[in-house]
Image (cartoon, rainbow, N blue to C red; front, side, top):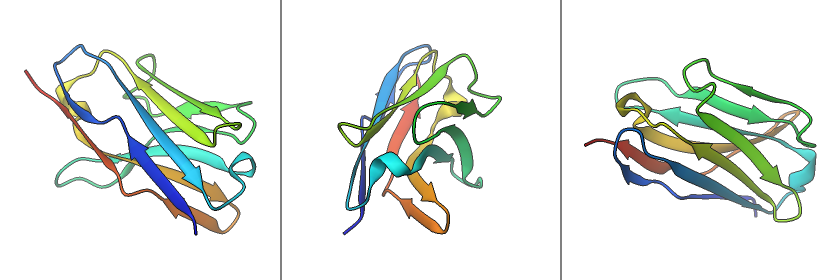
Length: 116
C-alpha cells in the first residue's frame, strides 16, 4: 500500500522557518522524482519544488527561489522542504508528490500558516 505522510506544518510568524517532511512507503522511493505542491484557499494547486530520484537536479517556483530548499534521503525514504523567510503568501496546504512515468502518488497534505 502506497503511503506518503507529510509532517512539520504549523503556524509561524513572517520571517520564520519550517521544515516539512514526507515519509514514503509502499513503493521504491529511490526510483521516483519527488515534489512539493501547495494549494492556497481559492487557488489552484501549484508546484513549489521538485527533486530528481538521485538528487542530481532540483527546480523551484520563482516565488520560493532562494528561500526554500528541497532535499531527500533515499535511505530513509523521506523528502524534505526547508522553508525560510516565510511570507503570509506562503500560507497553504502543502502536498508531497511522487511521480515515475504513469505512477503518480499524493500525500494528504499538511497545513502551513504564516501570520503575525
